[in-house]
Image (cartoon, rainbow, N blue to C red; front, side):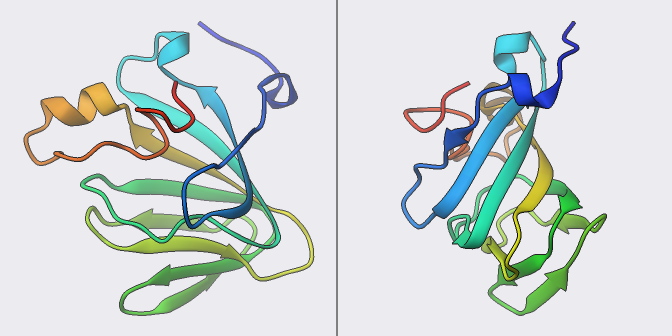
Length: 135
């Protein structure tokens, strides 16, 4: 079990190639013995963005503050505070802050270990495993 204020969870730079001025907080992760999913909070500063990438699992996102643009291969979709976003598996995507205030959102993804159990998931989560912001 875990019950803490989010500010007690360390903010780490998103150090994936293609990201700019973004941090991540692993609010709930494998370190907390969560068996299946990670709950992360991203802060993207004005002019910042997450990497443009794709993977075999979905993103489930809730926007807490600010507004931005979801960039995909097919379109650019604006979103704002309290927006709900679902990104399909294998869809190239990027979250961009388009305003002059912080963009803050929650994102839920499966753990790398869980993703490997599902035969549809064959790639490593760039935010949850390996050398990048490891849980």
